[in-house]
Amino acid sequence: MSDVTRRGLLVGATGLAAAGLGGCDLVADGPGRGGLYGASDWLTFHVQRWLLRHQPLVREFGPEAISAVFPTINTVDPDDPAYRRSKAAGFSDWRLPVTGLVARPMAFSLADLKAMPARTQITLHACEQGWSAIGQWTGVPLSQVLLAAGLKPEARFLVIRTVDGWWDTYDLFDALHPQTILAYGMNGGDLPVKHGAPVRLRVERQLGYKSLKYLASIEAVDRVDGIGQGRGSMVGELGFSWYAGI
Ligand SMILES: Nc1nc2c(c(=O)[nH]1)N[C@H]1C(S)=C(S)[C@@H](COP(=O)(O)O)O[C@H]1N2
Ligand SMILES: [Mo]
Image (tube, rainbow, N blue to C red; front, top):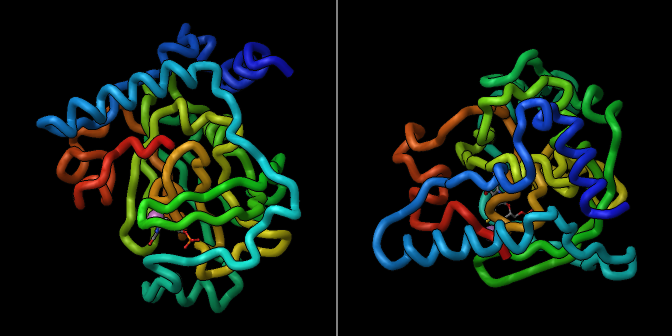
């Protein structure tokens, strides 16, 4: 399928076409930072967004490329009491609320997500802390979840929060990308707790820190500068770039 057709489907499916938004209008300014780094961040973001304007897929590998060991980093088993209870119950009570600028706020169970169209992809994960690994991820495209909830035309970003206090924001360019999935499976099995069970995000065109583990909620918003310190993400407040394109 050509990029144009694929983008047409993607945009049409989410109702953005009805809102009169073409692919280029999906280039939304994210939160910036000041000084020299701010200027180079801005340039990197806009040049990459322009180069990637046809939403190309990142490289996918064959099963033989899957890393024997996929490292884990930071949180590997959240100590949140509600999470622990849910984990003990096999995540049968887990729900993912999708709220904010959507026509139909809803909460998805794991079974709900597994009943939706699935995508499996074998991709390279690059962590900003100096390692990379190839893994296979299975999940539902985030675009499907947004289609079900009915993204409103004024929605421009998603705020995604996790049980261990991480949060990040994404423009619709990444949210609707075909390889952006809510993954519940890894390397052919259930997603392990150390890798973010029951559901983690995969945002394949950015560094590892944008692929949040232990998802707790998704909220559609029109701007991100009023959240926290206005940096658009938890790691942004620690000095990392909001846009982590590779
Ligand atoms: N909720 C949450 N998401 C997270 C993290 C985390 O500690 N907590 N670490 C991030 C970082 S820096 C990376 S590289 C990847 C690591 O995923 P892995 O532990 O499955 O390798 O998850 C990202 N998402
Ligand atoms: Mo990372």
